[in-house]
Image 1 (cartoon, rainbow, N blue to C red):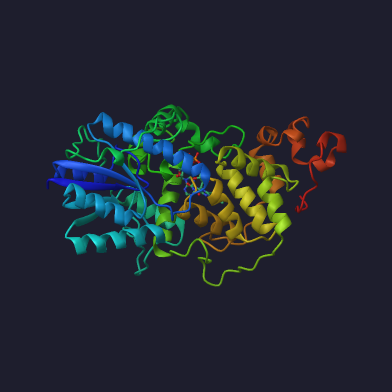
Image 2 (image 1 turned 120 degrees about the vertical axis):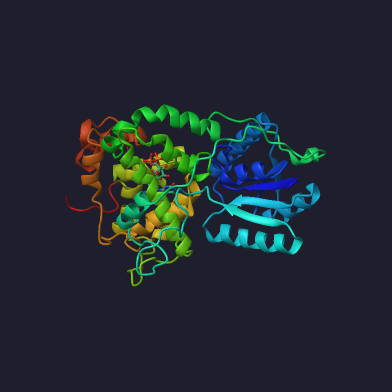
Length: 427
Ligand code: FAD
């Protein structure tokens, strides 16, 4: 093949990119393309992060002789327009599972067929392809994590691809197609690889510390995984054989698990996954706003919500506590909570976000849908010194030790206007 187009979406990297690797092998010239789709909702945190990822990708491609064509519009129209203009015989991209992504690739496949351009999708977004592992008895996907994890561990994984050494663009490409922008130190593949290398020293203690809120010892790789700055398949290869890898790889498998759930159940964002699940909720806008703002009066909940407001990221244990508080203490709709998370999180992702929300709300894949986290017990267990709360709820910072978790037991002067709890279990 003389020319191929690679359409990037949320696979913004050059390492272990099967569609890019195959195109570089098959074609003399490769045109890497990214299309900003104005119809795609993305929180503003993610938009800024995305810009950094694209600048970094463009820079990596330039180092290899290529560049990144960046356009705005409908991705199908843009990809076809570019393919025609450069005389490409084929378009390649990574397969993805959301309803949005699937509709996009179906339209692109149809448009390519009509124009006589070859279209091919490749793996790369998950470790195991959604739908590749199926339970016995003819089910379309695994509904429960543990059997999925067993099947996943026993499956063989695809090879890991290196980054292409050289990428050659066709001559005479319009200069206006190439965006300029400086890579930043936070987003993109280079930052992701640095973060991974420095974090690997914590891998050994991941199993013991990943729930310790104040220690903040999880990888914080989720935004990079969301945008595909890191290949999850390569990540497994990088940690393979290291002490402590198993509990970490298990978390990566949760990501695959929810992707195969979303692939089989595209309504995950709006409809209860579990047939017959209780799905009626109170309508209390003031309580919802207090939760969003981190003013529920329950310090561990407010600390998590404020961490997300400040950083666009929240610790997993705090996500569990805050989501459980919304749905099982305030009895508010998991969709409202999920949408708020989705707006703010840098890693906000349909499969992981709504899959986890449904798990917590008891409408999803949890085998114990009645489970309810008691925020005080969670606080004592996972923030025993109160330092996590102290970091994000400064008005309580003077309350020493774990007493910070029950400010209502303190004199009003030390609470500095902090509200009373909206709702709470007896301990
Ligand atoms: P680590 O502990 O270092 O784990 C490594 C990777 O494994 C993560 O980056 C992530 O890709 C994956 N992972 C870990 N835990 C989970 C999990 N429970 N489900 C799926 N994948 C997991 N994760 C998202 O990526 N996007 C979301 O929108 C999202 N929303 C969530 C909403 C709720 C209510 C809950 C309870 C969890 C949500 N998670 C989401 C899962 C998890 O909280 C984050 O992936 C994790 O906190 C990211 O931090 P980390 O990279 O340091 O994780």
